[in-house]
Image 1: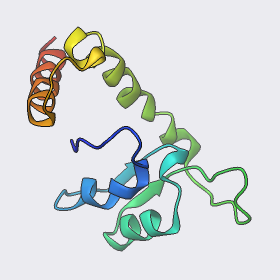
Image 2 (image 1 turned 45 degrees about the horizontal axis):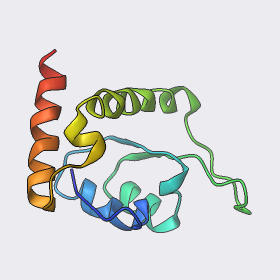
Image 3 (image 1 turned 90 degrees about the horizontal axis):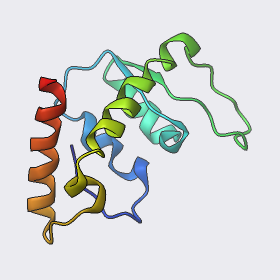
Image 4 (image 1 turned 45 degrees about the vertical axis):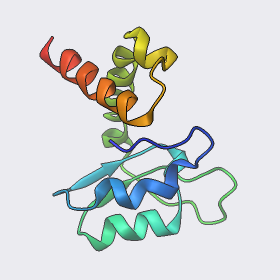
Length: 111
C-alpha cells in the first residue's frame, strides 16, 4: 500500500505499486488507463486488465471475465472502511494512518 494525498491521480503511483512484486496480471479500473502504466505492466511480462477510457481513440481489448475479479479488491476496501479510524481518518500523521490501515487490513483478513 502506498499512501497518497487525496488530490493525487491514481495512475501517478501505479508503477511504484507493482515494483518488486512478482505479477502475472494487473487488474485496475479506468483510472489507471494510460500507455505508460500498460507498458510498465507488459514490460514485466504481465497482462494488463485495464479497460480504456471512453474518450480514447484506440480502445484496448481486455479480458472482461478476469476484470470481474476486481470486485474482490472493492469489497476489501469496503470492509476496511467499516473501521471508523480508517473511514474518518482520525490520525493526524500519514505514518500513523497508514499503520492503522495495515492493522485494519490484518483484522479484515483474519475474519
